[in-house]
Image (cartoon, rainbow, N blue to C red; front, side):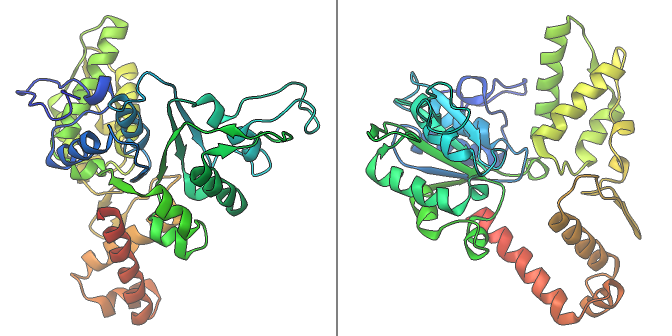
Length: 334
């Protein structure tokens, strides 16, 4: 992994680990060092971080610097598979094992033999399947649905989640014993808003890819560069990439970003200014509530009693909310 911790001398850096991760901030350098350490081992890895922060790319980077790099890399989103189908998707099934099973099917574990399996959004997996997954991790064997013969499991499992794992356990979403099995080596991906000049680096990288693909020479305007620095990027790298692509399509030789980002010129995390707060459509209720509470505290200069009155809640409730946010941040940094 010689590109993970290389210096980029002001150029648009090559992505780390075979063109996957990109960034030269201190936060990302710390991630690269962790990947370099754990990659060559067989240790289970739990990747945490906000949606769009690059967890799947980090998993691919771990695979790329492992002894399994010549084997397959398989990723499945546990939250996107209906509960009734997840067992068949993970472990496969035999012909005729259920209605519609017209032929045998190899599941994710079977397809990943000799390689790496990423269980994305593992906290969304049903609890009964978590029990079976734990057994597979412990015995290194599994059954296809409808089969009577066990198959060997030569797979390295990496899991990821955008939740705080400890809170997921406390909420009953994740088995505690499975957490400890998966999190032998935890790696937290930093949000884009904490990565400094990586925002500009990533934007230039995405723009260069589009220019090469379309054979153009478009560039960011001075205002666009300022917008990059001021926006909070709640959608992280995914939001940035989509924003650059939209601007590229709409722009001519010089492209702008400000019209595409609500509240970008004010520089708020969700587009906030003074006594106004703009919430992005599709934001999680937890994130919207936290943004409102934090913005209200800022407006009243940290006076919690006045903030609680304005929010229509008790002072005790406000303190409980703030303590919860603090614990969530500690989990993300652990």
